[in-house]
Amino acid sequence: MSTVTTTYKVSGMTCGHCEGAVSEEISKIEGVSAVKAVAASGEVAVTSSGELDEAAVREAVDEAGYELVGRA
Image (cartoon, rainbow, N blue to C red):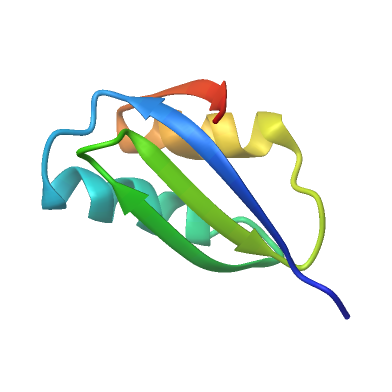
């Protein structure tokens, strides 16, 4: 089974706490195996077992209190 890594732009992240909040919510999405959020660049790399539904990613980022800008 192959994995897919997709990078998203997220606005509003400013610190390690932000990175953790976004990572925690996105990791709850089924199929996600790894999340690496970087506040400095505003990018979140998500590794999953297949293509993710962008609406699900947007909802998770929203739940964490940030805004998904789109794919990087």
